[in-house]
Length: 228
Length: 250
Image 1 (cartoon, helix red, strand yellow):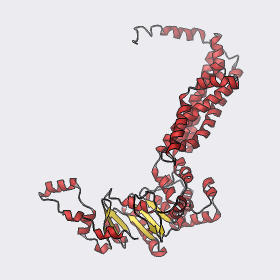
Image 2 (cartoon, each protein chain N blue to C red; image 1 turned 180 degrees about the vertical axis):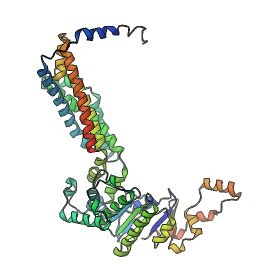
Image 3 (cartoon, one colour; image 1 turned 90 degrees about the vertical axis):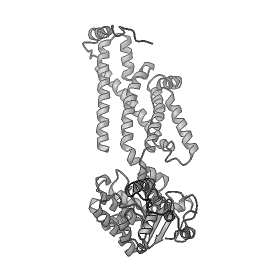
């Protein structure tokens, strides 16, 4: 498909649309918007934390340099691939008949998808760790579990934290999308206001989302700095 | 005992086979009348607890304190739950402090190992070995990453462990002078085979040429420079069959 000359010729329309309809910002529902933003944050934080807690130990089974049996490695990797391959939106839609509208289908979708993502990222981080400390734990008679605990985890902790905060950021954005299928939070509020042409409210909601993403980024950097 | 040989000759493999960090393909390794090669995983973990090991790059546990690194030497002997949750007994803690005192690092016990110098890191590794109270100490090029003064200090300390505690010490070394100065027995490894086994006095130039044969590149450059064939005869590559047959005894 070739890019037609003048494809961006109508860019002025977008500019006019924002300039004429999105301002001044409407703050009448700021309390509800703030609460919705907190709901979004809660969904994202809870889902990613739960996914991390499940994926973290499982990742060792998907790391070639730690897993005791090849079949276990293949099985765990397959499971991670399966979880990761289904988009969150599809998973949320699948869970709606069982869990109803609201945040729960979104939470389940985010947990399942992120187990797959964390599983892949963490297992590959484990495989990339330095052999030296692991050898040292083995050499003093340490078990496989101790090798993980003292020889691998300390090495990978800053990277896992970094991966967590990145995935939290992604989860916040995904939660916004899942608002369309009734997951609640600021995503749903934004969608509803957009459909009702209340663009001045949308402006405030978009600003809140930007503030939230920036705050998560700063928080992540702060925690990583402390842990390093 | 010092093990000499070129890089890639098999020195590290030999040392690592003794505590089965590397699984030997064939043969038997016996320590104190116990066959290490015939041990099950649990027995292996237990014997590893009795064999100390120091490494070229120290292999300390990163991001953990000096103290935790030292107490790790006790893993094979402590209750499994204690090591998992990191709650150590008073006895283990006292042992760790005493090991740190012995290597002169008691004051740095709470520091993270990343904050230490190379020499201090190797002393932490030695303190970890002291925690094990081993009868055998293995060293995979323990002084290769250290400057000359620190290397000498570490070697003197290891020699004292052998002298005062009767600890058998087997070290891979790159430095022939160090091996001659500190070892009572030297093993030469060439291309995976033992080509010399004797005292430092028996290690002459001829033996060194066997242990350190020039590779093709050296031979070519030697030819170009001197206009002669390499001075090392092909006979010097031949392995002393009697050494191979009787095996290596520590």
